[in-house]
Image 1 (cartoon, rainbow, N blue to C red):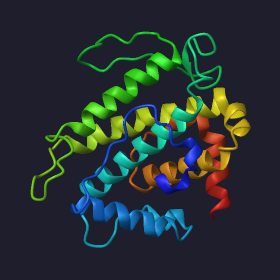
Image 2: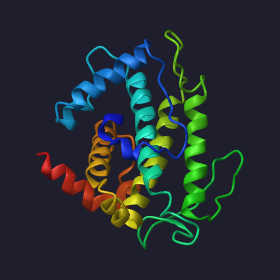
Image 3: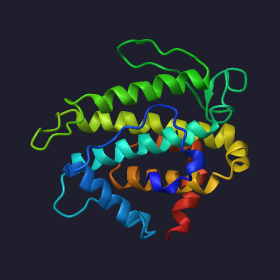
Amino acid sequence: MSFLFSSRSSKTFKPKKNIPEGSHQYELLKHAEATLGSGNLRQAVMLPEGEDLNEWIAVNTVDFFNQINMLYGTITEFCTEASCPVMSAGPRYEYHWADGTNIKKPIKCSAPKYIDYLMTWVQDQLDDETLFPSKIGVPFPKNFMSVAKTILKRLFRVYAHIYHQHFDSVMQLQEEAHLNTSFKHFIFFVQEFNLIDRRELAPLQELIEKLGSKDR
């Protein structure tokens, strides 16, 4: 949630995606913030009683986009074409970009370029009212869950890149507590609803196990 971040880290990489005040989704977001404040993240990610699963996933997906947007915004000066010529998460994992429409065949590109493509693509999905309806009574499309899973899978790669390539910079900026809390929230959420394949999580498997064991 945005309240995790200090004013110094208020620079975002892309414009923040706002949920309209007064809407049901805004109420859900407030509920999520309130339960997060209790400190029990496993409980905070659970579907609130009587709520629609798609709507809960939509609200949280927007929130994770905003969190990652802010986290990456704090380290953009360290993530350059020179420092990160490929989008990677450690020596064993490299990501090539394709969005299926503008870029159909995966291309190898630098991390800043990849993340720019990725965040722009996510933003386009979130702004599409047919995919993420913000008006009450407008149903979610049949393919909503598969779109949400793809968004979250791709957002995970930004966390993975930050942890593997820029954690020293994060520590230098004293933002590691924000990064860890945000990532823990993200992981507990995707685990609760089985939204990302285990193989995709492999680059941060050790950290995920560590975060999970602390919570038992």
